Image (cartoon, rainbow, N blue to C red):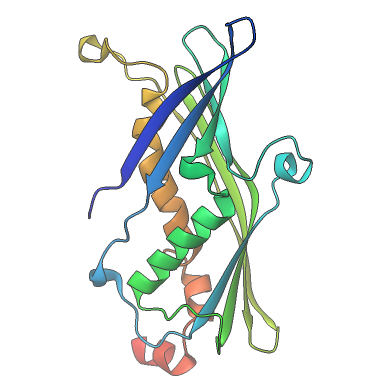
Length: 213
């Protein structure tokens, strides 16, 4: 499996007094699909849509490119944003589309026989010495007439402990999310379709399913 590249940059935001008011971190998870070994036969052409329905976004408390919170060594909160401030929904759509194409799907807005809709209900993390990372996605598959064929949630939460030991003396708090997020994000993308038998079945022609049995 090719490596998932992650770049983290921190920029201090200064007030009129010269004091740090808060920090902004930009985080880019460049998702890499798993490769042709995972291709599936008999797949419907599919359209993909992703909507950001996180309460903090809908309320206007955060911007659509907000990902989570990183606390500094002194406890100040910093916001982690997507690289280039791409809306998170756009980033997930980009990477989900890449994963679907890698699996053998034709992703199109014209003539699709299936529609795949993803609603971001929650996506966040809170990191200091350890990181709590969680997400909740609602996933639906419909046919071309609008009939609901499949509905599920992709939910996960985990705590990533800070790496202790002599070899980690130079680590700083945001090293934790830098190390942890690539695999967590990649699993989330793959769990939307590729790793879920029910959703995959709703996107696969019945004759292909029968032949696979």
